[in-house]
Every structure is written in C-alpha cells, then in structure tokens.
Length: 404
Image (cartoon, rainbow, N blue to C red; front, side):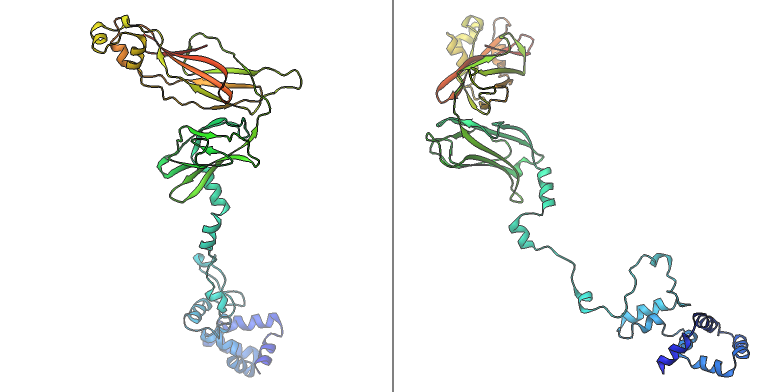
C-alpha cells in the first residue's frame, strides 16, 4: 500500500508540488473548505489520511527524519531539529551561521565512521628512523651558523705522516646545547696512535690535531665533523673530508704583498710553486700546508727603554728577559691551509697582544714591535717557507702589521 500511495502522489511533479503547497496551508478551516470544493470530498479525505500530508499537517516526521529511523537518542533529535525548517521538496533552509557545516549523512554512521581515530604518527618509528623530512630540513636550516671551518677544502691531498689541524667555529643563541664530534676512518687524533673520536662541548673546537698514518691506508681516509644538539640528541650539521695522497710536493712559496706596515687585520697571499714543465696549472690544488709558530719576542725593546726602577726591580738586563717578562708564551691558533685552483693560499693576521704594562714602564713612548716567526710545511718537518709576522703597536695606540 505504501508504495502505491507514494507512486500515486508522485504521478506528476506539478501535481505533487501543488498538493504539498496546499497542505502547508491547512492551518485555516477556510482553506480546507476551498480545497474541498475544488477537488471533492473523496480527494480531501484521501489527502487527510495520506502519510505525506499528515507529516505536513502535524509538522511531524519529515523526509530527513524518516531517513534516521534507525538512529538513537540525540541523533534523531538533531535530525528533527533540522527537519522543522523544511517547507518544500528542497533541503531545509539553514541559518546563516550553519550553512558551511558538513551535510548530514543518510542513516547512522557506520562503526568505522563513528570510532575510527584521527591518523597518528608512529612515535617509535619516528624515533628510530629520525625526524620527518620537513622537520629535519627545519633543523638543518636552523642549525648553528658556521663562521670558520678548516681545512676549507673537503677533498684535501696530504702526505703520509702529516699533521692536519682541524678547527670549527659556529654561532647559536644557545651554544651550550651543542657539542662538536670529530670522527675518523683511517687516521688518529691528538697523536699518531691517538683516538679515532674527539668530542668538544660547545660550538668552538679550537685546534684539533689529526695525524695521517705514516703508511697510507688502503681504505678511504676520512674525517667527519658532526654538530649535535644535546637536548634532542640530533645531528643538525655534518662536514666531511675525504683525503687523497699527494703525488708531488711544492718547494717554493712567494708572498705577493710587500714587507711594509699594513693596517690590521691584513691578508697575505702566496703563490705555491714551482710551475711544472709539463702539464697545465693548477699543479698543487687541494694540497695541505701546515703552519708552525715559534715563540714571539719584543723585536725593538732594549733595557734602556725600560724605566730604571722597574728594570732593576725585575732584573731586565737583556732582550730575552724583557720579552719573557712582558709577553706571555705564544698560544695563538695555527692551522692547515689548502692550495686553491690558482695554486695559491691566503693567510690573515690580526689579534694584537696586551703590552699595556710595557707601555706604562717605557722611559719614552715609542712604537712596540712584537715579532712572531712562522714556518709553512708541505711535507712533514720540511720547510716550504719561513716568514716573520711583526705586529706594531703605534704610539697612538693603533696596531699595524708587517711580514717578510
């Protein structure tokens, strides 16, 4: 019967719309009489007994509510609340603030729809495999910034038994949250038989001595520097050096700048040679060159320059005694250079020493020269070049440098 009723009321779209519209006006007896006179008593009786018209007359279960006959509790209450706004075949009019919500689905939610949790990452897998790629990229981009890393060349060429000086300096607002980790395959740190791993707290390594084996290793010779964030135990930056063995050695280096005074800091450039008779330059690219320093001294101060009372009190009767008294032992930072594609290296000099006590005890103000001997080596214990770096403290308090 139900199917026949639905079938009859849906005979034509125009008739169905007309009947539903008039059903919505049954709040008035006058309207009912008008309908009776126009369609007859039997049609009115049929309409009154029709489930569709009953729904409209009683504002009872609407089409939306009938779709939720299997709902329970609040689900049906929500459907009924929405159905009260339905006055035609179209969807119920929604309040302005409700129009962007997700439409109500037919029937009750399935077990999967109702209980399936939101997707979650596997914490164990993430910890074992490392952070997601985007987080890793963020950590790398936010990693401490490098201000100084030597050797500059990541593919250096060295000699068996050579000492290589590594150094790394980075900046970050919280440097104590990091440590530097040097590891090697094939060589040793600190001495020829030292450890293969060195760890330094913070972001400034100072000089880290690395020793190439006296017999070149058969496998790859590498050094890796990792910057590790302590709080997350995460490596945020990695630098890798892969060494090759030198096949030839330079025997000359020529300073391009003159020997006169220059303002500090000052950079000096050196041509590495000689050029070979065969082949084309560069001849020495990637080769490592070590610098060594002897102790510094006061080059132009003699006992007569020191006030008598102070000289006598401290027994400053010769130049060596004066240098030892006014200068602390040299503890500067030497390093390893690598020859570039122009067969050249560059060396910068800065950092004046404290000579304020000497200035205060001079008989007459004068320039003060602090001389530091420097030796470059391309192979162990063999000098490639010898120079003297002289820092000059002028009487006006400024510093200059000369080298030759």
